Image 1 (cartoon, rainbow, N blue to C red):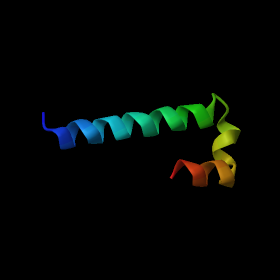
Image 2: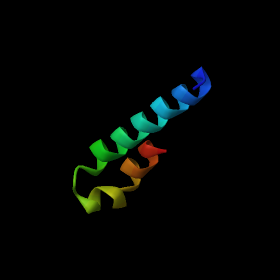
Image 3: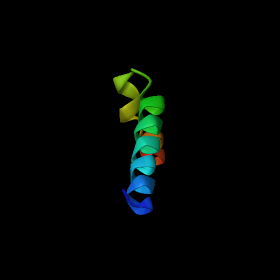
Length: 40
């Protein structure tokens, strides 16, 4: 794989980890606009 593809994969993994951390198993956390804006 090229470096570009590997970098993209790492970025996606970090984003998914961040979403999991913000979600924290609590669906109401995703309704909080402040939390949602930080995810994107």
